Length: 223
Image (cartoon, rainbow, N blue to C red; front, top):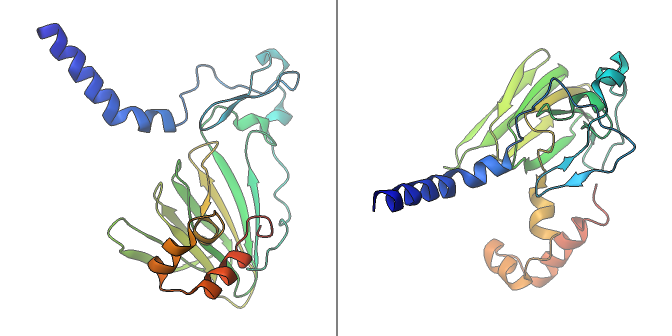
């Protein structure tokens, strides 16, 4: 009876924490793991495992990334992002981090989105950026972040940014997962194929309006 009780306790603990542990990056079991280009990635539910090459073959260049000197390509919202993960920066493989450079034109926005597997910390390199997030009680935490200031966006919470300055803005953000995931709210709602009747009832929109939104946020045409 006692043995069965312990089994039940273990199962309850696993159920309560299993999703969290499986969704988090695993702890590294060596100093570093530079991916071996000779082998393909092993895909799991939440990330791709890149087999390591012998540590004696690692070089300083493996731990240096020089690709953030210029912005990426701008979208219609005035946003350009350059995400960095182990695929293009081998030195961060298995370290549980990734990062991104984001540039905003004057008036440009980073639409509401969230990262299901990572907390994000955003540092404003230049500019004035209205930044914020919404908690699970629908409370908004927002303010204008100036050059040299930092804001944190808790894991899984919707957040957003807008350049409210008179010059372009640049943000450097780091996330505590090498595969944080990204859900853009407009595209997730109107570009994912959710039943149209449900959307009409949820947002009080008619058939024509839903069609307009779907064309605008179709993932085939939206960056």
